[in-house]
Image (cartoon, rainbow, N blue to C red; front, side, top):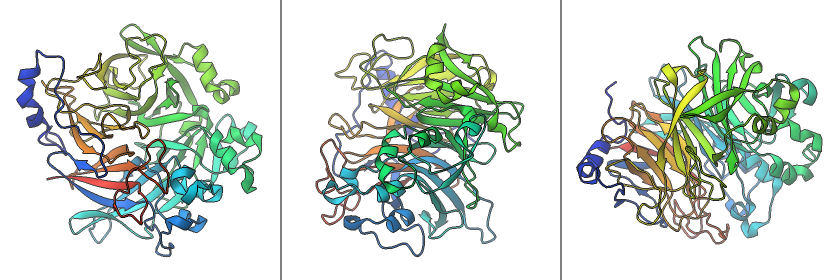
Length: 523
């Protein structure tokens, strides 16, 4: 593969022209960023396609989308309200030669004020709207589209039966109903997908009146785990892996050691959250590899971090946050998703920022705009004790905010990094989420060059409409397509179903705004 940007072949050209002029100037010029608007905007060299929207059918017998009267049947058989890209998986080639992919999205939220007319909550519907969606895609007539009733297509939600495995299963039981508050996910090298359950507490309270056991306080211990499932087998049960500890997670990333053992990195979903690593005791070919291994937490040390091992007793696994804090775990400024380079030598961490941080340190400036941390993985050995680290980017408007950090030749600036992805050419795709407060700049997908003279240079690939956030990115090399999720458009502070800030993507007065899976195609 030639080392050139997969979907932004012009990135080098965009940045090179101004790199020389700006090399002596620490403040990059950001001419291409605009304020959030009713409509979206694609970056130079891209076209945008709509692939799936909230309310689109997943099954042939799905009822029509009736947003003013949502039902459990609709929520169970239509694309959900919210989406974050968790994984893009290639199924075995079909005899008809049609290219196909399986897209897995996490569906973290279902806010009553944006989901229901007049804001009147319907917990039974909301419980089905959240969870995980597995959708079949096929490439026809020069574009990707969903397949109604595809073989792998299914929803995981509050009604899904899950297994519980690992050291804590004996304490909390071997099965539970529901995956809740899934914030993101990761494809694994061994063919499965890992899901990051976040804080299930608000969901347990919201669903407590449904008579499905959610009102039982003992059930809380069955949520907040890493969930593993096979996206290509629609009959497989999700498995909650308790050896990875219980904590509200923001992101999860899977890789393998040189000897084939799974290595899983994950972050705590908190304003001051920690970063963890799990190294399995056995090879990934063992179906229970994630049921035993070594948990460790990142601790600030020298020029980066050390991985400090934690015990694997049940109190530590059940109360992971407390045990990690006692071990001196470094707290990052609202850590989010992680990304690993193809060579396995560089790990990136998105941090949305924490202006309330008491004392800044080398990896956390306490910025309100957030930053990206770059870790060097020695020799590509994900089990190494020490990772060198540095700040790769510090967000904010360089014209008005001190301490911003962008590479020479940058053509954009951003706020609140949350999701990360690396395309096959090594460009880092940064998705931002300002939680609807896009008064200063639009959220979107931004590309950072990671090698060469313009390392750190930033450009934008996509700017979302007002109130929307970017829910990650995944890539298909053959069709030069980046898949992105445009989350909850119109959901600004104070907005509602009846009065959204935009009605994107249709912009029709009789339609609500819709979370949308898009394809960004290089021209």
